Amino acid sequence: MPTPLVDVTGLGENAVDIVLRLRQFPAPDGKVEIHSVTTRLGGQIATALAAIRMWGLKVRYIGSAGDDSSAELHAKEFERLGAEVHLRTVRHTPSRLSYILVNEASATRGVLWRRDRKLLLRPSDLKKEWIVRSKLLLIDGENPLASQRAAQWARSAGTSVVCDFDTATTDADKLLHDVDYPVLSSALTQHLAESPDYLTALPLLMNRYKCRLICTTLSEQGALAWDGESFWYAPAYRVHAVDTTGAGDLFHAGFTFGLLQGWGWQRILHFACAAAGLNCTAQGARGRIGSVRAIEALSRSRRRNASLYSARELKRAAEHARHPRS
Image 1: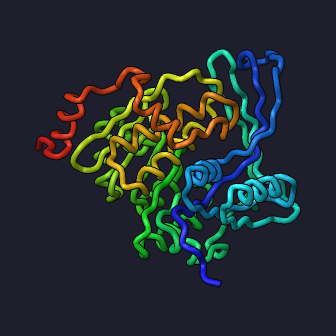
Image 2: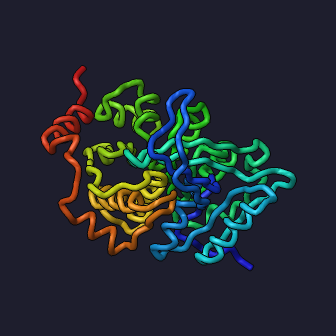
């Protein structure tokens, strides 16, 4: 049977999140009462694909898990969503587990995670048709060799590649040469460019990696992108934040969805920021994956945080990036 064409193939992390809600984070040697404990599904790529599928696109997930109940939970959820799933099961190995500590006072969180090295996907675990029979490939930095092979297959077939990288590793630097649309954390952007100035960093990184557009997420300050000609900026939205877990995953989902819709960059960034904001209004990595209609309603609203950049600043920075002084 031929491999069906899907809109997005995602290769990367899945996790079971144990969410611990605390009044505040403990001080060194301190004690804090746990208000509630819940178990939820998470993981960067798995969560992004769940959202994209809920918005009506066809998705394929490639990942790994141990031979425990966590693997069953992921498989059943993807089956419920109607997604194609290729989950490599590793015997006598626990699945990835994350403990999410949520500070109820600030709605911020800390993450403690565990992943056995046996869960690492290898290029030999992939089938080329899984990759090339998709319109877009979404990867993270969890499986560097497999992700690089998949990205190279994708680009050779004309399939766009988007990445979700948030930590500074040698592997991330190598992988970026095979990514069309890098969407990076603010910390990684600054690290790679060796500059705290995003208006300087993004053009520098685009020149280095030869991508089509590069974007950095700025948490409560929104997101900034550079396409080689213009900067695009969208502030974050004012919402009643309960838990920021999964905000980045939903941003990547919104970015990917908008890209496949053929939207302009400004609309894509607003949609992605709104998707991330809505998800923060409930607990867990998949707390509140809003409908496309709900996300667009928020993106059209004026409930936005103060802009980090003015239109004049962006125009001036774009002119400088296009024509740097000698």
